[in-house]
Image (cartoon, rainbow, N blue to C red; front, side):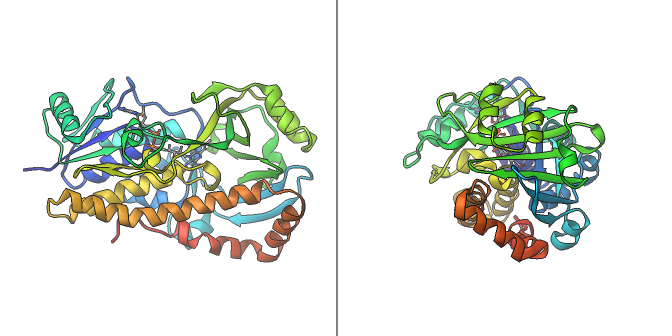
Length: 389
Ligand SMILES: Cc1cc2nc3c(=O)[nH]c(=O)nc-3n(C[C@H](O)[C@H](O)[C@H](O)COP(=O)(O)OP(=O)(O)OC[C@H]3O[C@@H](n4cnc5c(N)ncnc54)[C@H](O)[C@@H]3O)c2cc1C
């Protein structure tokens, strides 16, 4: 009999997990609360540890139609516009980490994943289906009633607001990181002229930073600003108050302030799930933001969800039907990796937003270390291959 896996949530994590299991000949049922696939209309960076997996899943050609490979990341002072340092990407990323570093419009990524799934006969996507956070046997009953299959493994990939995570003993609700992200995609900006062509520009300043990258040849530019903010509005995707944004950047270079003024922004409070339980019963496991939502300062949240999916499929394939053992091995492999990546994001946040003597030390470190050292610093992160034992 074919094993059956149920996946709750059709985000980047849920769909990648589905593909990783589908290629093993497993029956995959995905349950999504929305009526269709939904991603915000913003860009996302995909580092080589993630693109290598997407490549193994046979998606490189389809994704290459949409993604763009930046030549590097330029870290700049938001006040003086001086380049502090650069990390080389482009062909160097392919050589060093054996897979591209890419940026892509999120809906294109989601559509590519779902198109690949439609090629698998044993893969079913149930929309308008909100899965409740109830004990495991009840969940199995509910999912069997909808799909006709009783799952051997249930994967909650239901995102940062996972009700399943909140229901588990030892887990607490997601906590506010102190920062909000402002996002826009615009054709009306001259910001890319402030950093080397083809690069990702990251402008640093006290308590805030701004990331800017063109989305391929479309002419659209993706902008993300991180600022301190208000935790009270838990909704994603709210219209942002331009006056509030500008107030955070008022001491920055006027060219940046002008660019911020020229766009209309949407704002997300950044919540994190730290020290959560990742499993329940003998066949339920959490992945992606549901298990370990992290702030986006290392641009790794989706990459971790992608790594989770293939690692889980790998552990399951080697478990001889012992799902509890597969989950234990999965958690033992993934937790140290995710913790290390989270610490990297925390370090980036500290360094990006530094002021006073810490900022001076940061700038000196950037200068002394040089681009090659900074690239070497990323080997453990970008050179990692999940799901390879
Ligand atoms: C500003 C910002 C910038 C970022 N930049 C990057 C980046 O450059 N690179 C990177 O790797 N990461 C980045 N991230 C992180 C990345 O976006 C997330 O980590 C990733 O999207 C999480 O994917 P997921 O599949 O775990 O969850 P989600 O994408 O949140 O998907 C969860 C899905 O579950 C569904 N769902 C929820 N509850 C239920 C239920 N009860 N029943 C059924 N369905 C349900 C939801 O509708 C949704 O479709 C960024 C995040 C932010 C906020």
